[in-house]
Image (tube, rainbow, N blue to C red):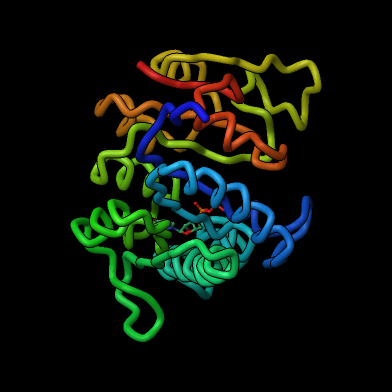
Length: 240
Ligand code: UDP
């Protein structure tokens, strides 16, 4: 078996990977399906940190738009807590398949999971444990894309792999325009200039400034995570 192209990976799983297409909440079938694919690359010796989203439960900005009662910051904290709920499900899915895992949260939650401490996360990764990073950055008004970029930088990851429900980065929204063009490679600069939906703008500027490549690919296609890690062309590679 050839060696994986990337040794340390930051995998960004959006909340939508926790529920069947078009649904909300958590489906353990979906969680087990994605965990199985990740556990296969862990067996190759890859060090994997997973930043999880919470959109299947609640996104701060969307929730705030439905009510005057909740403050925007509160809504974002609710979103961060949603990511920890997903993290607990993902943790148990990994461990059910014998994959040693730690859940760490950017918001301290004694009794639920470990606090995120960079050096401790690094140690877990060195020991081959999958590290799930919950509660995003711990601060409101950003998304877990920004958390993925920041954790990717501070943990010295070789790449950020963003799992989405489409095949990569398109010239337009492929769910609205079936003729949208799929890019196989792209520079961060072009992504910014064309306003392409890659990650949120804070996340892109972090990756660009710190020369951290980003791969956007479809998590619903079996084997895609493995292919991406082995250096095969899947999805869109965004770099400087
Ligand atoms: N969030 C936040 N700070 C962070 C990360 C997330 O306030 O550092 C909140 C934000 O409201 C966000 C929600 O948590 O909408 C869930 O994360 P996200 O929308 O990124 O989830 P995804 O779209 O990846 O499922």
